[in-house]
Amino acid sequence: MKDLNPNVRFIPFAPTKILNLFLSFSKYPKIDNLIPNADIYFATSPRFWPISNNHKKIVVFHDLAFEKFPEYSTGRDRFWHHLQNPQKEARDAKIIIADSQSTKNDLVKHYRLDPDKIKVVYLGVDSNLKKINDKNKLEKFRHKNNLSKNFMLYLGSLIPRKNIIGLLKLFARYRLTYPTNLKLVLAGNSNKIYLKKIKNYIHKNSLADCVIIKKYIKNNEKIYYYNLAKIFIYLSHYEGFGLPPLEAMACGTPVMASKNSSLLELFRDSALLIDPNQNNVQKLHQILTDNKLRNKYITYGKKLAQKLTWKRCARETFKIISSLG
Image 1: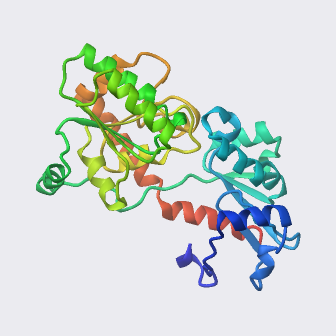
Image 2: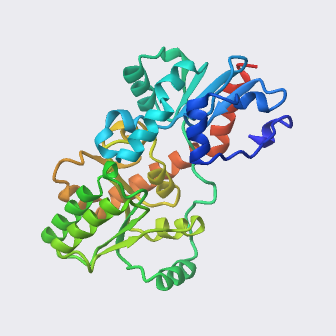
Image 3: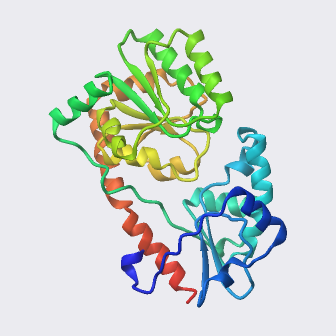
């Protein structure tokens, strides 16, 4: 938003967890009073930081996964959310910005908030993520990273809410039904306990030769993984938005995703949506082999990605902030 208003200033401030803990209990100092001439406090997510009553507060909520599915959170994460007290943050805010209508509905339902104070602003896709037409460039990257010519991709956190075991089950069933050289690339960070479960499932189902786990992918490498993938698959149990599928669409890759939460809201026409709790082998085969269907989702996906830009997100957010001026 810096280019939208010359009066916008960025002041870096990144407190540690110890300082967060102190701020949570002490309620002092009031962070907004440390910045001269501040009128509005804008938080990109619920924070510990104590704020005075002199300033109007806007808080962004990306999802309510910790409320809807506490079983998917670790004990440490639940403790941290308890300290944050996001419900109080939501009630104290003058305006709340939600990533999707789905998240807005969750906020109204779980926190009993006035829906009029919640504004929906969709996130955006990085303009650098796009279709690469240079085949030699793609093949060079494929060879360098030892990637198959036939793989489907999941990119995101490897955590229980993302239903990675469910994805592996579908992949295992598919390989039993259709003899194939198809590989699965799982890219993302995970906690040690869940990663062990993932690896155990891979071992027990003889998938070690066809499932590749990439713990870390650099931002400038994501575009290659998206472009090289046969499909992008995202069988999450719940999302507040769902940025990775949108990024894949921007790169011209067809997407198969769960028919729930914000994924249904956003990708109704631009992805093959399925119930992740059902046997979806035939639908997976369809999006892998039916060129007419693939081209449909590639076309609709690109149009959606072109519409949902960060510039649009910034302008809509700035308009909301300006409304309190």
